[in-house]
Image 1 (cartoon, rainbow, N blue to C red):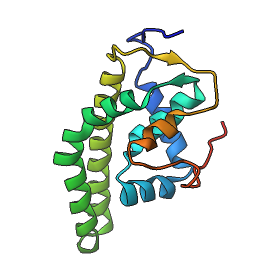
Image 2 (image 1 turned 90 degrees about the vertical axis):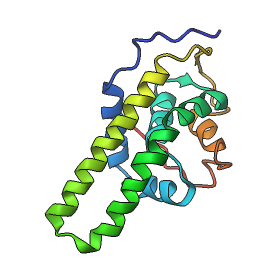
Image 3 (image 1 turned 45 degrees about the horizontal axis):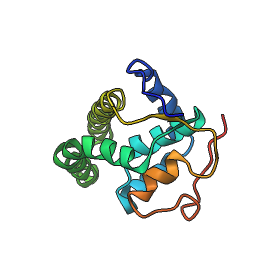
Image 4 (image 1 turned 30 degrees about the vertical axis):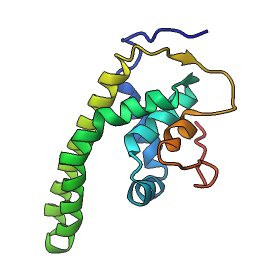
Length: 156
């Protein structure tokens, strides 16, 4: 039965778990980001929700994606491109400072996602079936299939 989402369910702590998941295979996430423009934070959130047996529809994933699109397109992605170009011209400590700034920007993106997630008025369904996953629904926005991407299932 659909449940209305409790606005206090998701805290900043969810991102700590997401960052732990990311640290297990960062190159896989970055390759999806670079080759398919998948947002790593949303993909990590999808994995988190799958692990915690909550389900969002593809439409809800689109809402979350649309929420961060302006920030990503106007700030984060251009900065990431600049950082990558500058890498060969910077000393390692200067480059690390740029990475640190990008991490601050990623965390701002996480805040936008979390704020929207906590205010969704659409039904939020506790999902106990394995027929489709949040990862599948999120990747569907990019016409991608987790099976075709050799999606690494996370074991906790």
